[in-house]
Image (tube, rainbow, N blue to C red):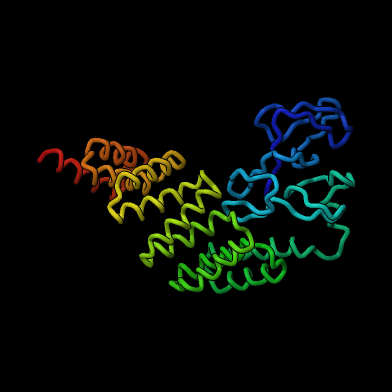
Length: 300
């Protein structure tokens, strides 16, 4: 789901059409004349502005239909006017109708809405580890909307967890075919190549994920792990630094960064990483063991 964030713009109230100045960095404003809450996904889209995915908070180009990170829908076809508006738009900016009420008067859900519901049901089942049932719902989502990439990625995640790597790759490839800037799908595909020791292909996938979403800490971390396994400690460290800047409280990333520093003989800096991790979780055994190992090297 996505919202259109407007900054430094003047918009019209959806109720009384009064001009409202939009402060920097907000996604809703109440009309000072009639008191109506204006969600900034409710106004007409202005080219060049940024769509924010509500599912994962990733910034996307305004012409994207799907999130570059998680593959979630940013826009949906409006049942009132037939045009695509940001997901969760309340009032149709063309017809001025309440979209939810308009849908309620129609007996059948659109294929896109059905696909969203099937995909969400599949995610719920996946979280409960009911994998085969989840796949059935992902297949229903794909049948309802063949252009929806997220259920393909979600199927791939299940196949990966079941060690069905080739089937998982096929799913990720289909997701990427439908949405070439799908960062999560690229990252997931890269993890399979890493596991298969196909390192050049893995790096290419992680680079594609980072290109789609430069703030994907997981992709930076995954790329760093591949470089570390190839003894490219300087390059690996750069990736881990980028990853830890994005996800500063991720214990695994902090330890990966510390281990790269340790491999470079920078024991004091490595200990600083382990201390940060232990400050977040004092019982974290990997951090404690790594710190003890670094301290021993200092006392040699």
